[in-house]
Length: 86
Length: 378
Image (cartoon, rainbow over the protein chains, first blue to last red):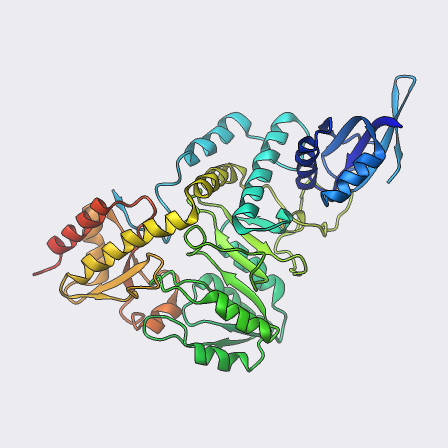
């Protein structure tokens, strides 16, 4: 099922590397400031809109991209909640 | 000015380098890895792209094994102080720069580290029989230069590294004079660590350098502090490159280095090597024709760093006269007393070093030789 996801990274280097790879792989991703409820790991986080999580996981594995976590974004009453799924 | 001091730092830099530094300072200006605004993203992209281009240059798969430093000296200090442990034995050459010898002597004085040195012949070329004899003493580390910064002699560093690898030694290479001139694939090499500056033959700005490391190589950081990552912890992160890059990087310098790397990748390292060979061969040939000049550099197997002395004039007067005529060369010991002792030029205070660069022209070389003939007494 399609949803919005956040992928976090240990450092900006890994975040920028992932952004470039995902864009080359034709994913609709955007580098955004890391939402504070998630972590203080690195300033940037990759936002993937309307994606399938398995596709994201497969791509991360295939390209050997180092990441810290994957979160699903839940929208309710105008607020965002982040559910860690990996 | 005719600039023949490229072994110290290259000049001019590659096309686009000054503009890239200026553009960063004028139009970007932000830090990397900390903030999350657009300017910080731009700064991050510059650092990332520079690392990617270096990875391509050295045939590396994982660019996080490239650590940015301020120069080759910092990279060598990181490697030597971070890898050599108290009581260990280190093998090095008799042609080293002080950026290798000083950290080693510091460890010898404070950490009970034993230093072995293999001999070189009168041209600085390593005595490979002695090298193999020293390897029999089972040094833990082989730390050596690929090429002398004093007389340009090129070591058979790949072959030597393979020999040392058989003994299980950990190998660190000072590649300061060869990177940007000789092709070098790090991934396929026997080296654990390679250190080099960005501002010499890579034609980038001063204040740039890097250390390349293998996946399984363990180095203790030289600096501890802010990295922009894992800010919740007061302990140094253990992932690369952040583990070794505490403190704000020289992003303006890296913006320039990125441009020079693009220039070198486009030009082709073989073409750069061929061009440098033409120029240094011409300089060697012309200098050989001036009576009373002693050439301390080998005629072949040479990177383009030429040291001389004169029977007619001391090195400081010669350098002064050249400078008065707008020719930039470097005299003295070139931060390499060991190399000058090997070449027999230590006692007299060293040599005059001519180091042309990729952009040096034949006309400039001929002009310098004409000036030399005018300066030196008949």
